[in-house]
Image 1 (cartoon, helix red, strand yellow):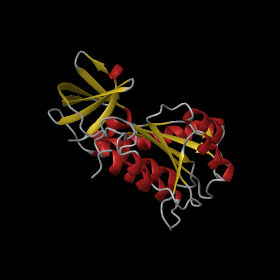
Image 2 (cartoon, helix red, strand yellow):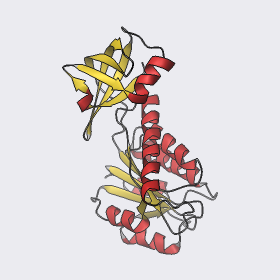
Image 3 (cartoon, one colour):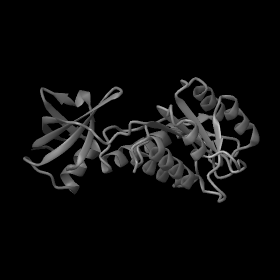
Length: 254
C-alpha cells in the first residue's frame, strides 16, 4: 500500500486532504481512484501517526481520503541515530540522505568543516536544505518509515560541536578517522555491553577528511575516535557503513 505524509492541519472531521506533489503522484502516476486504499502518515510535531485510509474523491487540486484504522508503526529503530555529515560534492549528499533514511536515521545534520569543498551561504543553504528534506521524505515513503527524519540546515563545524557537547551521558558520539588505528566500533560494543547507548551521533568528514584540530575538538567533548579498518572509504560509503554497523550492534538491523 502506497504511503504519503501530511500535516495534522490537513485533517478535518476524519478526512485527510492530500495536496501538492503527493496528490499529483497518486492521481496521474499511480492512477488512484475512489475506493482505493492509501496509508497516510500524519506529521504532528515530534509525534508521527499512521492511518489506513480510503480515497473518497479525486479532485484537480487534492485527493480526499477517509481515515480508517490507526496503524501501529513498527519500522522505527529503538536506537536514535543522528548523522552529522560534512556537505559532499555533486549528488553524493542526495545518496547519503536517501540511504541514511532507509537505514533508520533519526535526523541528519549537514556541516561545513575546514576541508569541505562545497560552500553554501544564506538562501542557497536554505534551498539545498529544502531539497534534502524532500529526498528524505521520498525515501521515508519508499521504505514505509513511521516518521520522516529531519534534515537540518547546514552548520559550521564549531556550531555542530557546541551542540553535540550538550548531549546527555547515554548519547554516544563517534567519529571515524583514517589516522586512528586502534579503537573500533567492536571495542565500543564490548565496553558498553552492560549499558548500551540510547542514541548515537556519527560525525562523517568530507572528501578531504578532517584536520587534526577538528579531531581534537571531538575528543574534548568526549567523542570516540574510531577506525573503519585498513581501507579508506569515500564519505558516502563511510556514512552508510557506520549507520549499518551501529544499527546492527545497538539498533534493529539484522
